[in-house]
Length: 118
Image (cartoon, rainbow, N blue to C red; front, side, top):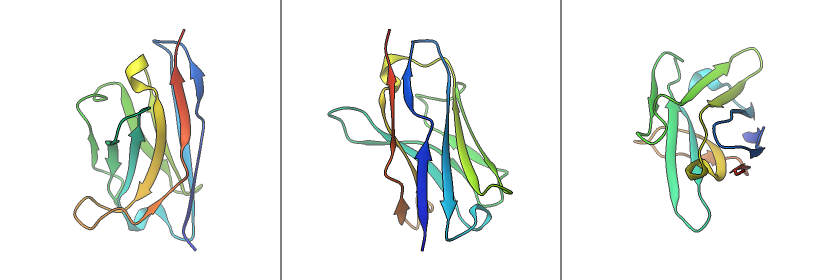
């Protein structure tokens, strides 16, 4: 069955960096769109980034553009989110999710918490 397991979250100071990972099983990342979605404390879900099945097209929310980079390792079947220049506004639980915006994200991981604080 499809499983998505996020890791790499933690406490980081403002201006710092983190790399999140999403290990996928039950399917291969080359067959579907993948996304990172976050939920800040007390707020709704916010789409952050996507990578297409071909691995050659990315998209980013305006709030993270130029600071975050989505990528994947096909051999490891793992999705990544490199996050730089973090601010307190990036504090959230980060989820990886399988699927496109048009077809819907049908599988989600349990999330990893990122806290940006001094």
